[in-house]
Length: 178
Image (cartoon, rainbow, N blue to C red; front, side, top):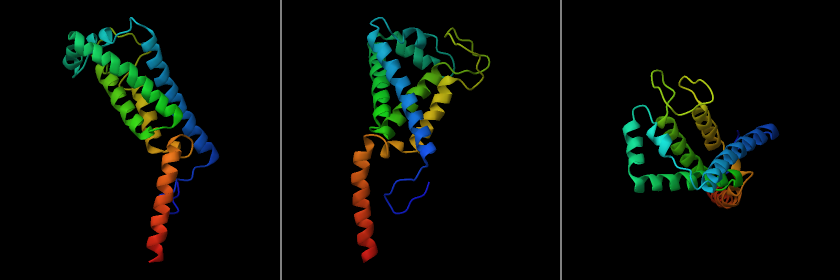
């Protein structure tokens, strides 16, 4: 990454930008699909997942599930949050905000069912995990997305960033001319 002037974009090679955008799209598709699948199933609820919570915050998560109004709000936030994060990542729109929201959501999933020794859980898994599970790996992927602003080059954020970059370049040129 190389910055020529304030406000300019980092310069990635063709393979780098392709790999980073592909990662953003893959994670975005996963979030979008999970949100759409939950929204399209009228019987979906986070009740079982929350009730099976283990770990330090299990009382918090089971408490959310025990109140019907709170559970309904959690379900709505989860469904629409997944959908919105997925769309934002796919379109490259508000990627920083979407990435932070994704990290918060994934951290909650991880803390509800942490893969720690001695914490037996009835939540079905498709593998054996010790500290690192799919949720933590996806958090790592979202951190990469957050750290490398590919949407400024390939995505709707480019429109906003191009305007800001032009303003920064004009300001920089004015300062240099003084």
